Image 1 (cartoon, rainbow, N blue to C red):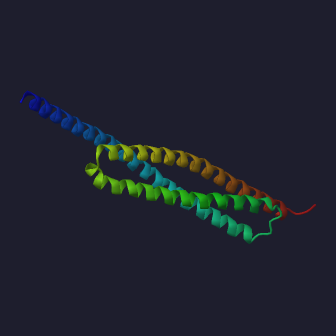
Image 2: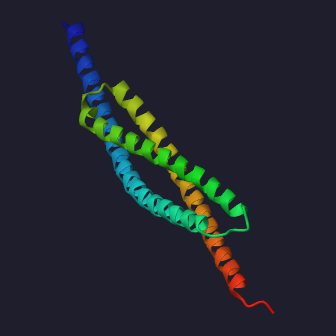
Image 3: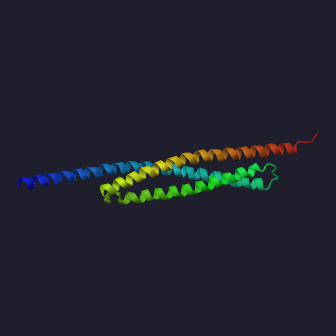
Length: 168
């Protein structure tokens, strides 16, 4: 009887420890979901900036196509920018898919075992880290593209002014 009581108490303690572990993991998951919400906000801003930059790029390409441009490096810069813009579109689409997956996980997280919870949390941390790194890279590349656009516009305006100047 004594052994049976010890066994019952041990099982009870293990069960309560398991519940406590799941509670801790659920709290950690909630923190990650809050971080996911912040990443989603940043992502929405990136998407908006990206769309403006893409439109700016298209407008500048149309402008260059209608002009007689003597410096072919403008077109090289624009082609390089276009590659980066397309890369960003793929990254942004991937982020949207990952964030949707996290939202879907939210509905079922409490039904997972502790080990499954740990695995999901670990993967989410990796994904969030990757997304933050990619946001940082995209921000830098956005700035570079916008600077190149500004430089090309300035050079075009300067060249047009020189062409419009009367020859002495």
